[in-house]
Length: 187
Image: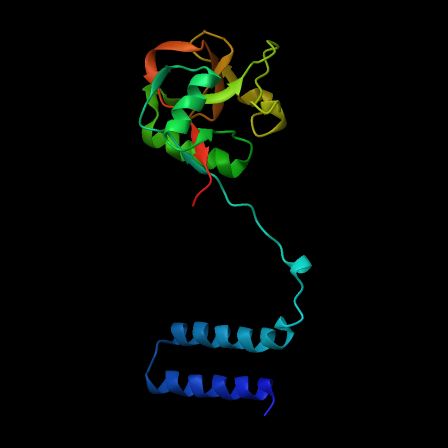
């Protein structure tokens, strides 16, 4: 008996078993669909080539360590993140921005109307346009020029992320402590 016929017979037996055991219609349909998918794909599975497979990048885990700091320098952020098994977060995609928004709302430093956390974006060259530590301008990623601001009239080389989805320039040290945005690859 050819393998396709065997799968058809198996499908019919499974349908009969499902009817006899009075499984709900939704579960039966899902089970039947899975069997049909196996039946349709099994003859060609041996022909699959690794070059035809596609892979999606694993999303980063965005988090803020429990230790907060008054020091917003990149070196300080690297140290805080490393203690928690991560690295400073680069916010370059909408998905990362959404995850960052959730994390900062849940545990950022509250100032009137917003929650804040240190960002590793910096004005390294003093031109007023922040860039990520890898040298890419933030405006070339997710933070366009209209999403930049100044925190409490205190512009400087450091930047905060605010829950209004802005990067806010600031001095590198603050009187209050703030969390640091970090990332790591999920296990």
